[in-house]
Structures are given as structure tokens and as C-alpha cells.
Image 1 (tube, rainbow, N blue to C red):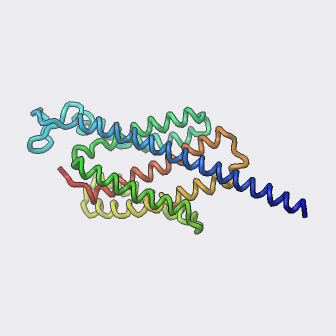
Image 2: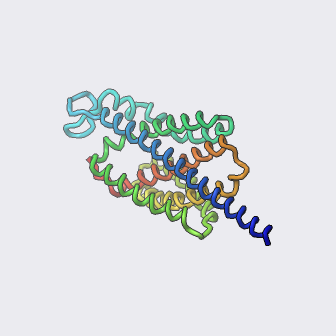
Length: 256
């Protein structure tokens, strides 16, 4: 009987230790993601506001607004293709390099990636009003928080969503690249609707995956690996948030 009580005590202590570690792990994931979003927002705003001017230049954007030299270089020259695909290339590079990077190196790479993403999406300040961008960001934040909370608290195993969502994501990327050249409004609308649904599902799925991965491997992970695992989790949720925001902006954004 004493042995049974000792086993129960040890099990309870182990469970409490995992729960405490999980809370710390999730806090690190969300805090890293939040800093990345802040970096992206600051870079996008800084660059976006430097691209348009009321002072006449040779690069007319719309009546009364002109592209600055910086704006022309970034978004009207061949460099725009580099900016468009740079974040995608960096994501694949990060996945290939993560095992060779230290935790500090992985975190630095993540913040550099967040800055590159800010540069890549800074064009939204040329197209949409600042008020609508802020409103969409707030709506995205509320939706993301609800979806992530669902993924964290639900007792339902949603791991089966993964394969379906990844296949949908691949199809979405291919369709988006094709529509760059087609310029079809109908296809653009369909991509935006499907994109919102896919990244809503991925937000819940990725949150649950981060939680279950920690619970399953916490006993075997050292501090360095736990830190890199938190950064990878932050990257996944960051991408879910950014893409959800960009697709919602297509519906909620008021164009200049």
C-alpha cells in the first residue's frame, strides 16, 4: 500500500512538472511569435510609408500619389520578384538548417525572417488604408486567439487534419503562383476564401501539435532542443497568423 501511494505521489509530481513545463514552453512560443509579429509590423510600416509620396515624381501610383524611388525599386522593378519569394525560400532554408543551428542562432534567423516578411508585405500600405489594416489586424488577433485556444484546450484529436490541410496549402500556393500571371479576379476570390479556411484550421492544428509534441518528448528533450522546438512552434503559428491576416485583408481592407 505504501508503495502504491508512493507511485501515485511520484506520478502526480511528474504530471505537475510536465504541466508547469508545458505552460513555460507555450509562453515561450507565444512570446517569440509576438516579437516576430512586432518586427514584421514595424518593418512593413516603415518601408510602406517610404514608398508613397504626394510630391510629384516620374512614377505615378494614382491621382495625387506617386511612388518614391524606394517604392519603384522595391515594387516596380524586377526586385519585386525577389521580395515576393524571399520569405518562402527562407522558410525552407530554416527547416533544412534548424538541426545545425544553435537555439540563439535559430532565434536570430527567425527575427531576420520576420523582418524579410515585413519587407515583402509592406506593399499593403500602398493599396489599403491604414485604418482598415489596423482593423483587420485586430480581427485577425481575436480570431487567432480563439482558434489557438481551441487547439490547446480541446480533448478531440485533430491530428488527422494535418494531411488534408497540408495538401490544401500546397494547392493554394500553386494556385496563387499561377494567378500571379493570370490575374483572374474569380480565382483570386476563391484563393482568399480557401486561404482563410486553411489557415484557421492550421492555427488550431499547429497549437495542438506543439502541445502534444512537448508532452510526448519532454522527458527526452534537453534545454537546447526545447528552445529550438519553441522557436519552430513560434514560426508555424507566426505563419498561420500572417497568412490569415493577409487573406482577411482581401475582404476587410478598404482600398486607397
